[in-house]
Image (cartoon, rainbow, N blue to C red):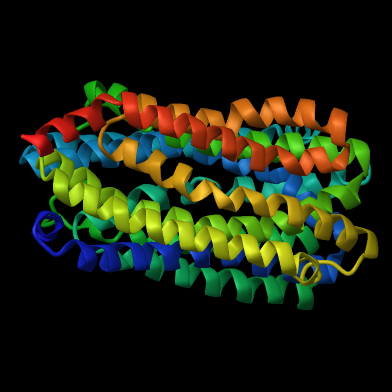
Length: 447
């Protein structure tokens, strides 16, 4: 079976085979937001960009619970396949698939029926309300496909088909770009067209990643096994950090939107949106490295091949550091040019350019935090992974957004994320010393 190569093939070869498709897939996924943002911003203006970012937390919140289930399930599946227990692996996948389907479908229905209340909660003002309602209702019809694509796409890697997630994102990029041009530029459908393009692209991606899971000959698929409530608790526990991370992303965007809206107005939200597109693109590369490493780590940890785990981590951390430094330099010296790709308002460009120089500092440390968070999840260190995610995504974001602006104004808002990443790195150093999983590996390697 394809998964056995995870424990035998050369680590550097596995790294390339698994992380390159994951990186490209993540970058392409991030590029969708970039390209759609460019098309929408240039055609519809700053308010349309602000509308998309106002709704962003709603979409991210849908993903947060699904990430808990998906990453928690994949950690269990990988370790059990490594130890030879295929029954638990199959039951875990079946349970995860059912839970995500029910949750994501219900979530989309609630979003559609309660769009007005959700829009108010998200911070939409009178200027943006109509567009926010249109975008929110439209995207709610498709929101279930993205969580299901994550689960099936990452499961494809475990059955030895890491390239399928890449193929899915390529198709999504083509669909999203072509439909955005058609619906926004030629049919003048504005934010409704942007939402339709994104939603149909999500559906297209899922139809690609689900194919291996529809074949009974694969180790895990949607037909074998049964719903097992006992695996749900382990999934929630093991995937908690990824859920916290995703929910934290939604919370951070929500808090930043409110802060910029109150201090500057829609132009402030639009400026933050332009930087968010670039930051998402950079983070996509780092998350691609981490996600590609995850099945290699979990399988070899379950097989007690700890030297291989350490080898893949070394390669991953060096790669992540190089990427982080590169993105930092790009934001420091090219922030205004990048913002100009999405908007032509002088005020928006000025705000974004100043913010990019400060936000860039986050990339000096965030690669270590992201990779180690996924690493701890992969080896079953859910507490450590959750602590990292909570620190960088919730604790220091909430503290920072309420504290730093009191002393530094708008500059303090931009400082929130870099400080959160730095404080999390200090926490990471502590977790490396006290983690039971890390101690087990150290003892075995010494013996």
